[in-house]
Length: 149
Image (cartoon, rainbow, N blue to C red; front, side, top):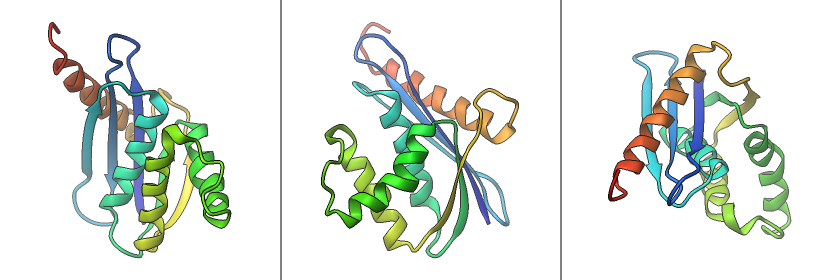
């Protein structure tokens, strides 16, 4: 079983730099971590990007628990995506459509079995704290790309 800790966030400032982070504890071997950032973004997009990046890392047919401190993102992934699939993707929020379709595609094409789990942020969980630090690093690097910072 894989344990995937995901986090994302966005700074409220010029061009809104945001970051996402993923910390995965695989069944064997060393932990896997990944992070990135973007400009002109928002927190939900960064949270969804973190989930999507974690799913990309998982091998075909994996069983995993995906932890997120975003109840909104967990609801979108666990409940809304199956409904949108069933209803031919009608009424999907335009702002997140591409990311939600990518999450759905990874879930289906890789035959992943995911348990979606909410975790309180900044509550001492080492996996969540590490994903948060990676997301902060992604946001800092995105901010560096803005002239004058």
